[in-house]
Image 1 (cartoon, rainbow, N blue to C red):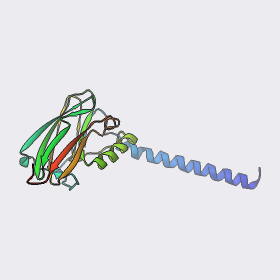
Image 2 (cartoon, rainbow, N blue to C red):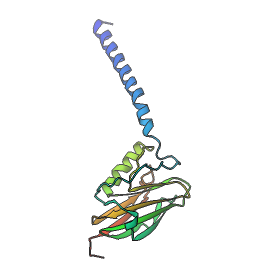
Image 3 (tube, rainbow, N blue to C red):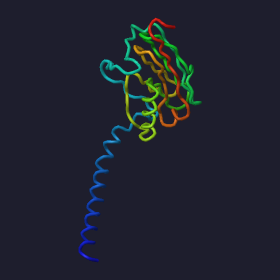
Length: 181
């Protein structure tokens, strides 16, 4: 063994130790985010709902909801109904009931956003997230979302828990432009 080989082996060993240290330091950070998609519900956020404009609308005020829509979520990986019609500007109250034996969620978004989020959920199934367009509903329980559809278009609602979206647990929301049926 020559001096160059010994130096290279020493560098490899040092890099391996650095990588192991980096991994050891990173795992607790990832673990602190890993608690959302167990069979336990998310803790409610303290304070008012943050209203952020999304491509599919904005969080609504319950007092402005003129219509409620009951949505069932089942272990067959289906929603009932699978299609919802809305008028632009309408604020809806979604009452989502999990009739199954496993956790489900109801997430409103664009097809592209939901697909991207679903990919992340497969990679990080315990990822924590809580937004006003999401309801995480334990078995036998009911959740609620109040949402204002201020943009016309076709959007999705989906269960993004790993494997559920991929099994077809997706529905469509069609938002007709204001003044059109």
